[in-house]
Length: 285
Image (cartoon, rainbow, N blue to C red; front, side, top):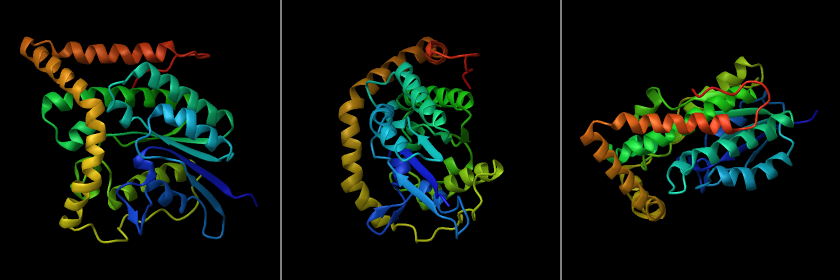
């Protein structure tokens, strides 16, 4: 019997950052893969996700490699890193995701997608810095919602809910889930796939397998790898983020903040309308 093939694409979230097993990352996708079929049925799992990946990386690098695997299930969870770059362009994000989604569904794969919390709120940034990032993440989520519906994806609404505000679900960097959080993502995806008749194995356990990192271990991570992670993104994003924050402050002082939200909504609508479609245009969620 041909094994069920599951290929995961994306960034550090899907790579498994925050859920260490030995010297490797495991993550929600690996946990989900273990429950896709009964124990005596083979499942082939390939994780192509790479920390720092953006939608361009998924389109140009990960998708060709994933299509070569002829997957039955393909997860594409991406977009947060796009919002953290000075090159952020919701039109480009929409075009890339539409092309990626179509490539997998065109090959007959079942597509998994998710919308995600905004990084500014997760990091606890001040309002003027957090709001521009939140606006960008809402735009990405709206595009993912609309395109997931168009392409018939199994979509997980992960941008809100108790798991977002529960610190026990998150690792020390406040951006990646810890083991509990990864297990929650795997559980929710498994429930959706079981409802669709695709996941026939045992659902992942919600209970962590390993003890949570100690406070000293968390501080050590932040002082080493975590500091490097922030520094790499600040050199790219910080100048623009400060500019966005200044604009945010000016609009609030004038009482015109609603214009920023309206402009972002118009950009999403224009990005979706610009995509070549047969039949109805997707609606932004």
